[in-house]
Image (cartoon, rainbow, N blue to C red; front, side):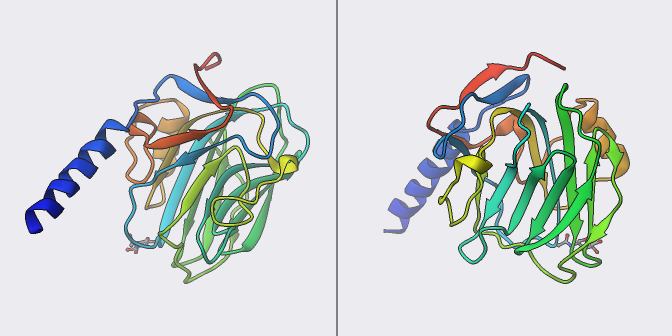
Length: 223
Ligand SMILES: *[C@@H]1O[C@H](CO)[C@@H](O)[C@H](O)[C@H]1NC(C)=O
């Protein structure tokens, strides 16, 4: 019995290794508004998070609301969410609480985002194109739940579902990374400059994902 179990574990980890893709130089294109098309990202994570950083690059001409990164647990569908409610504003949700960041959006070029948070102080940072916005604080002392569904292209209003087309993403997303610590300004700068930096929860260079519906992988066109 024990041997069968360990054999199954080896097979499982082999399959896991095979499913990892180096996405360097590529993007997910979300070509069409819908309430179904999305990408499910499968994280390497065992414990709740006291600190995190999520970075990605996105290109869109949407002027309505959309989700950039939707991380839900069974308890909270807005456990960790980066959402743009309107041009010029980004909202970070942690454990269903929200802070807003104001910025001059430029829709004519891909935008690089890094968002980080530490439980000890509750301080959240949002970096846009290597510039830190005014810091905000939320959920001091909280831990972000570990059993998560991470979705690109849609905003989860339940665990892994309940999408709305009015919050769907249309455009291109690439260079998605997630760490269980707060990146230094130097590390954010390196990512912005596309210097390789491997990540321990989600790594664009070794990504585990499932495409659901009409999402296409293409070489990135703009740098
Ligand atoms: C989270 O970051 C703080 C520093 O802000 C550090 O003291 C703590 O050990 C970190 N927690 C984990 C689990 O890495």
